[in-house]
Image 1 (cartoon, rainbow, N blue to C red):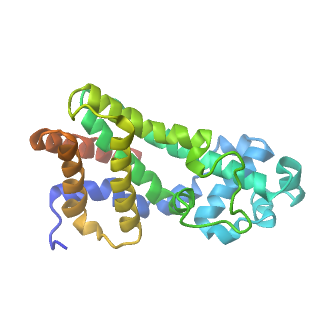
Image 2: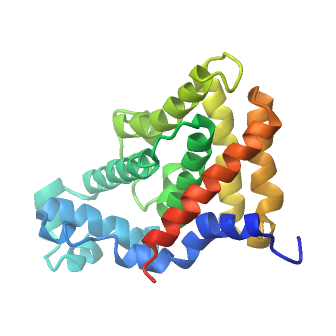
Length: 257
C-alpha cells in the first residue's frame, strides 16, 4: 500500500470509502419523514431494511419489526400473512432502492464517464447497505427464508432485479452507440463490468483492499476494462477523472456535515 494518498485517491475515498463513514447516518435516516407517514405495510418493510443493516439478519423477526413501528406482532400477519411474504417485500424494495440509486446518475456528453459514475454509485449503495448487498447476492441468509421468492430462481430474476440490472446494460449500450468501445452485445460486456465491480466492492467491504490503495486498484481496473472493451487509454483516463470529480462533488454536496 502507498504511504501518501495522492489527490485522485483522496477523491475516490470520498466517493467509495466515505460511504462507510456515513453508514450509521444512512441507517438512521433510512426511514425518512415521508416513510413515517406510510401505511403499516410499507412501514414494516422500511423498518425491516433498517433493522437488517443495524442489527443483522438474525434480527429479522416479527416481534422486533413490529416493535420498530410501535405495533403488535399481529401487524406482520395482518399485512403479510407471515414473515416469508414480508421478507419477499423487503427483497423487492431493496432491489428497487438499488435501481433508484444507480439510475440517479445524470447523463452527460461522456457516456464512459457516466458508466464509471454508475459504478461508483453502485459502490456507494453497497457500502451504505452492506447487509442488504450481501443478501441480494446470496452471501448471507435470513432465518427461515431460504427462498422467499416463488417466481424466480434468484433475486435478480425478479422484475425488480431485472430492472436494477438494466441500468448497467443501458449504460453500456450508450457507450457502444457512441463508438467508444467495439461493437458487441451489451449484456456480456455489462456482465464483465459487473463481475469486476462486485469483486472490488466485496474486497473493499472486507477491508482486503485498504482505502489508501484505492487508486492503485480501482483506477487501473476501470481503465483496463474500458481499454479491453475497445476504448483508448487516454479517453478512458479522461472519463475516469470526470466521473470521480462528479461523484465527489455530489457526495460533498449531500454530506450531512
